[in-house]
Image 1 (cartoon, one colour):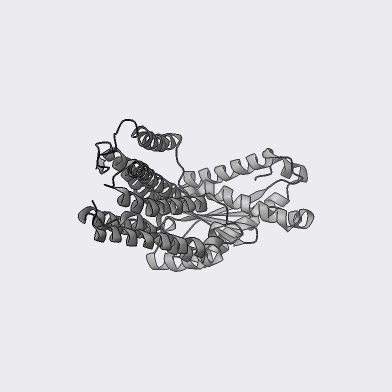
Image 2 (cartoon, rainbow, N blue to C red):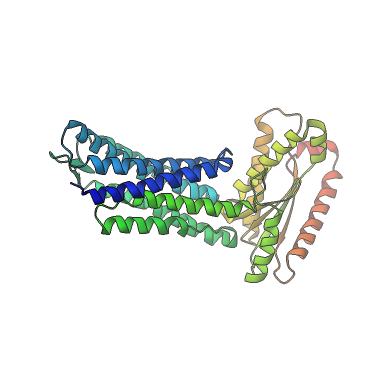
Amino acid sequence: MESAFELTTVYVTNIFGIVLIGVLLVGNLWRLSERNAENTYLLLILFFSFCGCVLDPIAYTADGKPGVLARIVVYSSNTLLYLSDLFGTFFWLLFLAEHLKWRFTALHRTILAAALIIGVAVAILNHFVPMAFDVSPSNVYERRNGFWLYMIIDYSFLLNSVIIYLICKHRGGVFKSFPILVYFVPLIIGTAIQSLFYGISAISASIAVSIAGIFATLQSERVFKDRLTGVFNYAYLDYLKRLYTRKKVSHVSGILININGFKHINQTYGRAVGNQLLVKLAKFITQSVGELGNVIRYSGDEFIAFINTQNEIAISVCITRIKSRITEFNKSTQRPYKLSVCFSTLNYDSEKGMEDFINEIYHGMREEKIAYYSMPEHDRRERPSF
């Protein structure tokens, strides 16, 4: 049975975690109100972390207490704790992948779904055939060999997130950096403390601290984000200029994308329609570039995709993906207008600098625009995404 001191430490650490989660939630309501996958995953991470902070002291308090009610509480609270940890690590993986614009393959998604289903199934079956844990006749929680299955699944999700980060960092270079240590360091410390000192519950609270680190990182990134489209803004270009100069970055290229007839769309159908078009195009470009780079909204209807390669095939693949998504968008519903864009590509030359790069890629865009508007109107309609 737990001593009063051990129960006190459990209550204190988890109350700290609950308060921290509450502060994070209240302080970031403005951010989380924006509906996107990244914010959804953050909310789910917060929710399961909160569940852990609530369930942990309940499980500790009921452990070893006599009676049927205590037995039910020990079983149910520990089951829910297993599931909270399982889903918490799973949604951390999805959040990081979404933030870095990682594209899961169908096989990868299937493996992740299978691991999650196995974890949930074991938690349910454990009530009938104790595999992960059992409760002794004196209502004391006892681990079983199936516990290690949960550890394998949880740590596989965490390891998978590290691998995804390293791959994105390799492919995207300076464009794909995220301080994942702000998540892992508190979690590792909390796990070590709870393992070394029996009776101290630190994991749930440490996860709350990790989430606080994530929000702090996202807040600093928000300075460089365009409010409408969610891609990077003009200020990020100035940051890249300093970064390129300091690190002498090479093997980088840019794709300038400009909407044809955007002024006409704004004047004819209203700015609300124009804004929706900008948001859609930003999404198409971001999805197409993926982990290779980042997208900047340079001006009203112009975007620059910086990618960490000068390989012509890779650049061509990105452009083909953008065109494909635009074509699908134009075919999806009947609209009185078509989304049409021009492209200009250029390899970045570290010897010339950012100003020369912008001037040259804009010169290429002017030529593309002249060629586009010199076409007969019928031909433009036939080739809306070129």
